Image 1 (cartoon, rainbow, N blue to C red):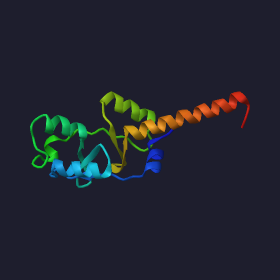
Image 2 (image 1 turned 180 degrees about the horizontal axis):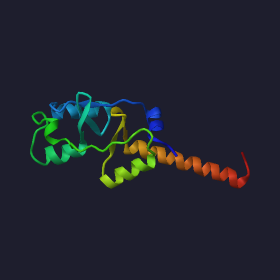
Image 3 (image 1 turned 90 degrees about the vertical axis):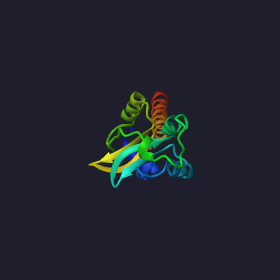
Image 4 (image 1 turned 90 degrees about the horizontal axis):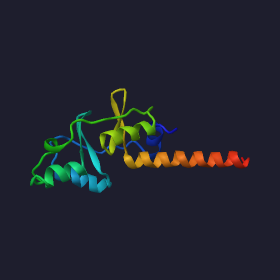
Length: 144
């Protein structure tokens, strides 16, 4: 069973963020540059929120705001769910499904150590299942 720490070990600990007073446009530039769907909003070292493509679509475009004038703090999602490195990928999938979210910051002893996405979680679950299938096939056929 894969845990969050293993996923971070494979993908790295890079965290892309903007401050609360950044413009939505700046956040979108960063997301496009890094090819990611969300950025954390950090006030110093503290997580103040998360800004995602969904926030942009629902709170800027549909409300007639402009991305160059709107601050991230005005439209970010302030309630951020997070996981710890020892938690399993299955726990992450359950949380993401229940809360309808696609990104989870990883916090260890109060310190931000990474972010995992739904893509990371699905990739890890598929790898776990493939390993289990191969192991069972070897057991059934008696091969090593």
